[in-house]
Length: 257
Picture (spheres, rainbow, N blue to C red):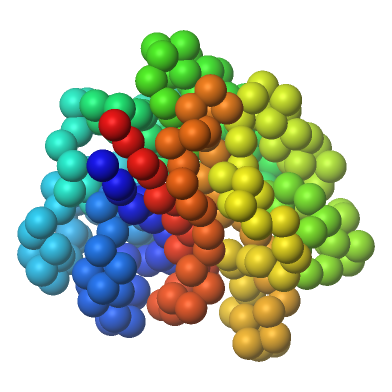
């Protein structure tokens, strides 16, 4: 069995629906789609999504209006779905989807941005640590575990266009990058780098100064897999051709029993 999984920060689901979102998903024949930054409350779910009726859709909404939010669109049947880590400060922002399938567990996570001061950076780092704790707990169950989403950090210098200019900017701070080092040390594999070691491969571009046409970007969207099950990932990549958001989708293809 082969499955195509996408992760995409849509920067507002209602906005991206006006930019060919539904046709894009249909053309790509995506089996499972995790989106971040829906910016929706439950009563605001767009009627247009009826056009994606082949998917079961699972939501996590932030308490704060017009902020954060995640959703999972899935053709395969789920065995379970969670939207919390069990820590109140993390569980009210709509950042967490954890879906269990027959052969694997999938995290769809919108990791916090570290901007807006030291307090928010500290929150991001606490969220990171709790995420790793939950990732490891799910991994201990024995199934393959995939962790997808907007991590809001570029890992290595190759993962952004201007590393030197951004060494003191959140998203490329040493303390943020150290957590990505840590998960790799714990045996989590960056699926994109498993298949592609080239530079200038980005998933987010600022809306300012024509950054996307000039490819002045950052790679901050990832699929990680536990090393024990990395063999199920038969391909991974970045869909830089897909427009509609300041992020583009990242994907993996799975080959399952």
